[in-house]
Amino acid sequence: GMSKERMMEIRRQNCNPMIMKVTYYKNPVFINQGHMQWLWDVDGRRYLDLFAGVATVSVGHCHPKVTAAAEKQLRKLWHTTNIYVYSPLHEYVDKLAATLPDPLKVIYLTNSGSEANDLAVLLARLHTGNFDIINLRGSYHGGSPQTMGLTSNSTYKYPIATGFGCHNTMCPDVFAGPWGGSHCRDSLIQTIRNCSCPKGSCMANDRYIGQLKEVFATSVPSRIAAFFGEPIMGVGGAVQYPKNFLKDTYKLVRERGGVCIADEVQTGFGRTGSHFWGFQGHDVMPDIVTMAKGIANGFPMGAVVTTHEIAASFGKGVYFNTFGGNPVACAIASSVLDTMKEDGTQQISHDVGAYLLTGLSKIRDKYEIVGDVRGKGLQIGVEMVKDKTSREPLPPAAISEIFEDTKDMGVLIGKGGVYGQTFRIKPPMCITKDDADFFLAVFNQALQNYVK
Ligand code: PMP
Image 1 (tube, rainbow, N blue to C red):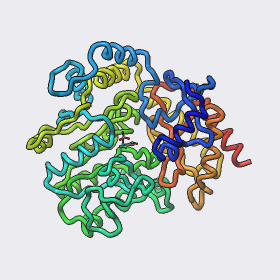
Image 2 (tube, helix red, strand yellow; image 1 turned 30 degrees about the vertical axis):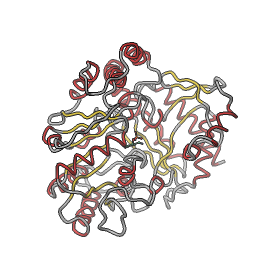
Image 3 (cartoon, helix red, strand yellow; image 1 turned 45 degrees about the vertical axis):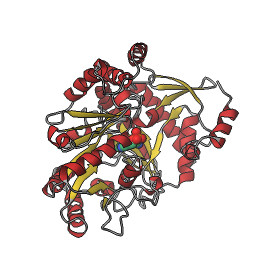
Image 4 (cartoon, protein in one colour; image 1 turned 180 degrees about the vertical axis):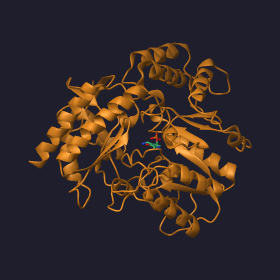
């Protein structure tokens, strides 16, 4: 392969500048190959991959079974478009529909999460005849001009029109709900953790729902197209909602004529452990579900699933997507669904996720700078703070130091949260408890190195 120096030179000279911005490490990792939960760099060093290319490698890097399915399809047919009828698309759509409850049975295939969310916005607007969208503060829904408007984190936003209504000077393009992420002291998470209400009657929920009603009363009279929400926030830092929060929100949004969209780009395909779809953990039924990332284990693909009724509202024009439903993508995604069943990835997500949360909670109790450990299944966040009383985010330089050290000891993790203060753990769903032990030891050591 090409030398490291030459790659970095090309990266600086010919790649878009964003690529350097998202190069996480001070000393970048030069990846050469992967197998299951492992990655090897160009010098042959092995890393435990607990980030999975941002929760995307779902069943394992180069999983032999999925790789064989891809190879088989590559020799047979690469592409034709939806103009023609071909088996891989129909086999896949049939299998994917079977994982979703009625009435979520109509599937559009796309090539990314942003594209899926763009399409979901369009579907919601055409179906309701309304325009405005409600989202959650701290959320990430994509990087296309329109989904950038949905994304509620200034890091990923540019001051341009993104196709959303503006009735509120606080909020240039979309109505971000006023309930905070875990970064602020008076936050959703903080409230839950300090909550002393009896189980099932959480005041935090009343409070956030009250704030949502305020948004309706002050900004959005009666013209909601959709509510967008992840079942557990991903990029936002594994933020979880109070019990019944999504249920109550869905009800309020529907009363105002809106549809409810579950962004399952990160939480889908068993990642939350307890259910195959994250929304099932909230006892809600979305009108539209969007998905990508884990759908094809790293092969570019996304999907929107909705009802026949909503799909019918989209009937006037022709929505055409050249690559959507590509035979190779479909063959891979089909094999991914089979493999998830055979390998028991959801169960692994449940068991190893719980094991990691227990281990991380012990680490949280040991260090003043570990403010919160949260998540579900293999969608985990470790929020780093200056101290547990102020809950101020640990500054970026400190985060980088711990992050780099963890990598140098052989484990790759992610970063997220509004201030980049939350470490994110979302590995391929083939990791073992031994891998978890290895990570816990490494992370503990990195924290020890930092605080001493
Ligand atoms: N929704 C969520 C919840 C995501 O995490 C992401 C990507 N991080 C997207 C949408 C956008 O997906 P993509 O990068 O494939 O466009």
